[in-house]
Length: 80
Image (cartoon, rainbow, N blue to C red; front, side, top):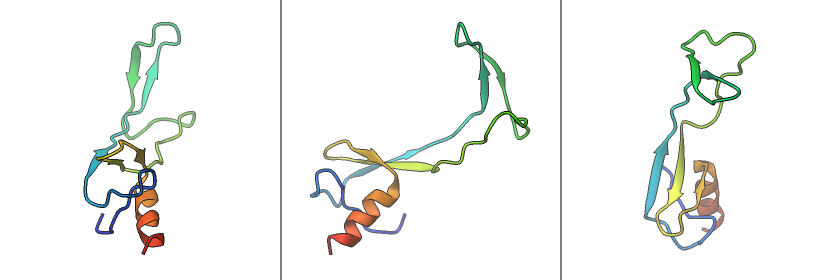
């Protein structure tokens, strides 16, 4: 997170951002009620793919766009 950002949507914001930390929790839910039946720890089993997404996302503090950090970094690099 030590790269300059530029919002790819509003194309003006370079200073005001929200960093959204993502914490994935593997669960098994009831198909009818949606109630959580089981929370998995390290061992989630062969039929459950572990979360492989980013640990955080960035939100523009001006227009509200939420994207991966790379989108904001690439926009800043291409705008120089």
